[in-house]
Every structure is written in C-alpha cells, then in structure tokens.
Image (cartoon, rainbow, N blue to C red; front, top):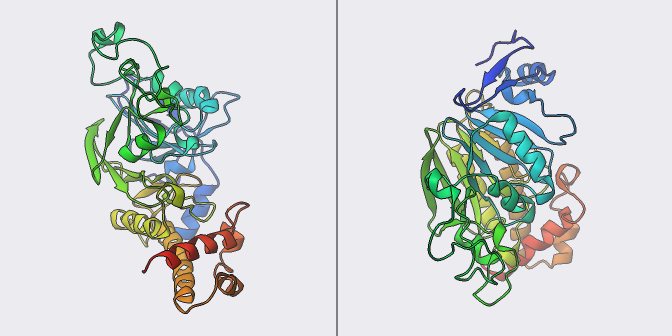
Length: 367
C-alpha cells in the first residue's frame, strides 16, 4: 500500500535490477479523487511513467509485475521480471517501434513470450516486428546465432500456407494463441493465407486452458469460446492478481460479438461471468484484482460487474420481447438500450445495431 504522502520522486524497480530499469512515477490529482471516492489508497496505476519525447503511448503500472501500455488502437499488457518480458498483444505494425521503446523503458530483458488475446489485427499486427525483436526462451543462445538444421531452417516466408519450406521463426519470441486463431490466419499448403506467416502464432492449444510459469509467476491462458470470437483468451497473472481480457471487454463501448467468427452474446456474458469469478475485491468492492480490457481504462471487479449487469439487462430485454413474438422493429421501438447509449453507443456499434445482433441470435436458437 502506498501512503498518501508519497513523494513526487518515488521510483520503483521493475523485476530484477540486472535487466530492469528504475521507473520514475509521477503523482497525479487522480490519487486524491480515488481516495475521496473509495477510500482506496493511491496506487501506482494512477501514476504515469514517462516515455521518450515523441512516443504517443502511455505506460501505467497495474499491479505487481504487470504494466499496461495504452494510447494505441488496443491495450497491451506487459509482465516483466528477472527472466525477461511477456506481452499480451502487440497492437499494430505501425506502432511496433513505439511499443518496443515503451517496453525498454520498463526492462532491458529479452521479449520471450507474446500472447494474442483475440484474432483482431489491432491486437496482433505487431507480431512480426515485436516478436522478431524477441528471443525464443526454449532455445540455447548458441542455436539462435546460426540456423537450425533440418526442416524449416531456411529464412523463407513465401511458401503459401506455411508449407515445409517455411521459416519456423526460431529467433523471435514465442507467440501463444488459441488454435482457432491460427486456423483463421492460415491456410492449407498451396493456398494463399489471409495473413502473412510472420504474423501467425508459433504455439497454439485447443483445450480450455493452458498454464505455465514465467518470472516466478503462474500464468493461466483461459479460452473463452464463442465470446467476441471463437478464439478469445483471458490471461491471468496469478501472483500480480491481474487479468488481461482482450475484447471480451471493450470498456468505452458495448462489447462486439462477431458471429462471422464464432462470437455470440451468450459467450460474451459467459466470459464476463468468468472474469467476475476470478476477480477478488480488496475493500468495499474496490481495488483487489485488476482487469486490463482490450480498450479503455484499467478496471476492478465492481467495474466488470457493472458492465456485465448492463449487458445482461439489455440481453434479457431483447430476449423476452422476442419470445413474446415481437418483431425486430417492435423491439427496437422499445429502446432496450436507452439509459446506456450515452455511455456505450459508438458509430458502427450503436444501441440499435447491438439490439439487432442480439435479436438475430435469440431468434435463431432457444435460450
């Protein structure tokens, strides 16, 4: 806990001093607002970490060893420690140099792992450049200096579908994702894939969860089927008590569920309930577990509960009206999203569009 009299010169050490930098934390007026509203003591998450001039991104300490890089098209979670660096998502290719610069403010350690939380380009677009700047933690340094003999040893990425001649990318960071994401980005041998090989994940899984330990912290990758898409992951940093949840939560707007890629409103609600199941508040439903959404500010359990309740109310209004035999036009005339539109309706995904998507889903299958 940080005392209210925390001085402006406070600094924290990120991970092991051997490969982590001293990070200056700037006090913010937000501290006083947080304390006056929730009696929560000021947290480092309310303090901005300075980046080099010209970098448009923003770095915030979340909890423990986890930071959030914001200011781009999507949030990026960063875990640092004595072993190296892990990223959840990589934003876009255009921001890769700025993202790498922001990571280097936090740590000099190698970027060993990347986890892709969702198959959206604004979350994985930096895989090639950011991943390429990393180091595969499973290979000895001597193997990384030269080529790995055998299949896939050649530096090629021009084989359609990533066939036998394709580069296995042994030099870069290991990129985790759910199998469904790889299936959507790749194609059979001889067929041009939707995305270039350099953006593909390098390690996938098809089970409900996959766990490993990094920087002395247990990490869980939890698949949330049929949520925003069919390839969404929740990444749980257990010691730091932080969740990175991708686009299951899009804090500034209604959550998008893409039915063309296996998403559904029921899956979004299931994902939100899973997040609430894991989160634990510290005091009066405040603080405790932190949640990094795909877009928007850092959340706690109460924020997620409010977001879940909002979506549940809208869903049940539309579902009940559809079950009563009302047409889409009649349901929209009821304005099921009326009180939430000022906060969450955005161009392209308005309350009306959300109602149409929910109505389509509940009309196609029983509850």
